[in-house]
Picture 1 (cartoon, rainbow, N blue to C red):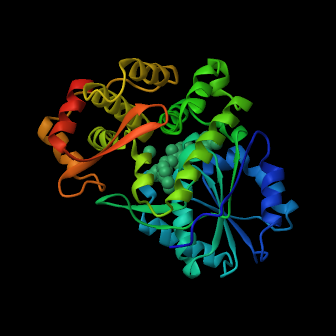
Picture 2 (cartoon, protein in one colour; picture 1 turned 90 degrees about the vertical axis):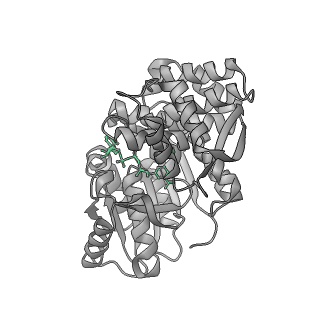
Picture 3 (cartoon, rainbow, N blue to C red; picture 1 turned 30 degrees about the vertical axis):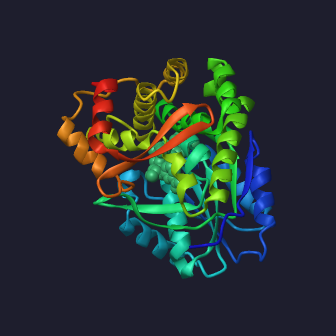
Length: 359
Ligand SMILES: NC(=O)c1ccc[n+]([C@@H]2O[C@H](COP(=O)([O-])OP(=O)(O)OC[C@H]3O[C@@H](n4cnc5c(N)ncnc54)[C@H](O)[C@@H]3O)[C@@H](O)[C@H]2O)c1
Ligand SMILES: [Zn+2]
């Protein structure tokens, strides 16, 4: 476990070359080598600019392609990656740069945390989900067949350079998934980000616009503030699970092809809002406002296919790794910037809300 965050965060549009080169030059002590672990789709999007930045910083480009896709975010892939890095000349003072989405940064960061008992690393996120969420906060992990992200470490990157121009090539569905986490951040961080999101014209939501820089900056800074106050996941960081308890159960039952993570989070947010309205914690107006925003950014409002039975839903909910003693800690929205942690909720009640909202 490394010490609390000191990660430098850069956000902008068309800043990749300059910011990355500056961040690499500023590393003290100067690394012996910069080794890039890159997603192959990201390579098409940023490969050239990246090479220039690294060369400008006085390093030669040493690149290893990252295993692609969630199913390959495994211990076996991490081991293979570590071996390739060593064969490429990695040593204790090498610097690892993860370029890609959350799968790449989770795995490359995990390898960085273990290799030579920990080497320094940095991130260039190239998906919206990673810019708004995965690249921030120092959590790194790989999956086990028994569950997602079960093996990992806290290992804070030295810097994260976020350039929204890298999003131009991102497929629509990946974009919407990132928006699921962005809407979650808006509900957590407060009215400023929520108003910002609602006021962006539709056309500008898709492009690498300055408006998007503001959005990812707000999300990134919000998460980073929460993490700084609670680096190793105590009560505060729990808030970041808003929508995720319901969402994980739906994601697992539908499978990632039918329901990607961000889409499942969006359905989870709908359930959380429904739950809150029923408990008298939040207004119907607020729930409608968020649901409208999610529809506008292309997020689903229905479960794909038939909902699992209540018994299956309960089983899925109890498997949530955050479930303690069979009950769940629910995060429920009150209004923008205000959310309550409700401990010890029975999985039966959560399953019933899912059925009432999505059944
Ligand atoms: N560490 C954390 O705190 C944290 C937080 C949230 C999520 N995560 C993890 O993040 C992962 C999901 O991240 P993700 O959605 O970025 O997935 P991902 O890394 O698989 O990327 C999604 C897809 O987009 C492609 N891609 C990446 N950049 C592209 C670009 N610029 N243009 C075109 N295609 C591009 C990738 O090849 C991939 O097919 C999960 O494994 C999740 O567990 C981690
Ligand atoms: Zn998430």
